[in-house]
Length: 164
Image (cartoon, rainbow, N blue to C red; front, side):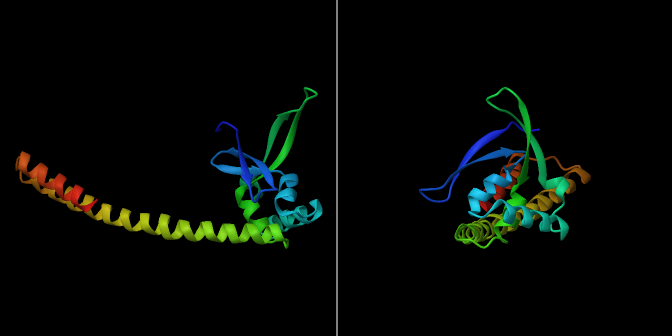
């Protein structure tokens, strides 16, 4: 399990929220979602219940209890929900903060798709094709017992560098 870390989320100058980062995701309590989306606990709770009831998310993979030691020295287990739940709730709540969250989430998703995944997928396909070509060339050298000369190795490296 990854080490617990705290990050600060700030939606505007007035709202600031500490979030738990663990296991490569963000975790919030229902109380923190109340603050994030500025909706009553009952509204957040209803949306979470419906997310699980409708089968949108599997509770076992997006819900966890984390232990906290309070100032009284006692340890308490507090329910947390992962980023998947936070996003699902964010798309269900009707509030100004919910709208701001959806605008932000859509912007991030578009940026990721345009700059991240889409570009990376194309690059990976190109690199995969180059690698296959180089492996085929090396295989032919090995099968035909042709020694790999320095010039051949440099030529292959230059082609790889040129394509980067």
